[in-house]
Image (cartoon, rainbow, N blue to C red; front, side):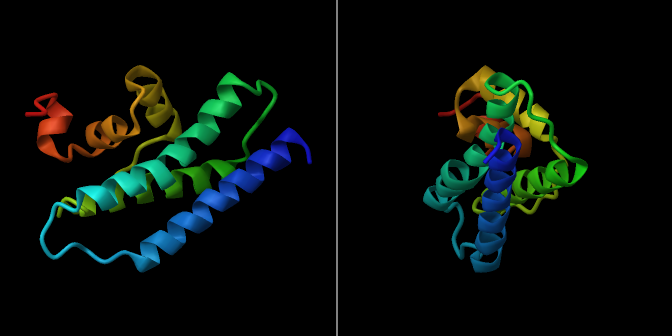
Length: 130
């Protein structure tokens, strides 16, 4: 398997997982559902962003097709929506995977990435964690 094929397989995996997570998601009756939000960060958002980080930082020759960028965009923004929904907030983000990757490199924390990109929870997005 070539590097490009490996990335394509990883993209397919995160998108398929996102679609399953989206179908199985039930809005919390009493938000916030912080554990579920963290699961979406660790198991979905993080792996999605890391595909881009790995390709740009470790494998310089990897080129993504427009379709692959569309799939990454779907998973990234879908997971951001699921994360926000765990806090009872509906949002329709339109963030690029590059912006999320740059933020991850700055913060080193996928939850901070989700909080900044969604503004949820408000305390985390403004830096007032207590």
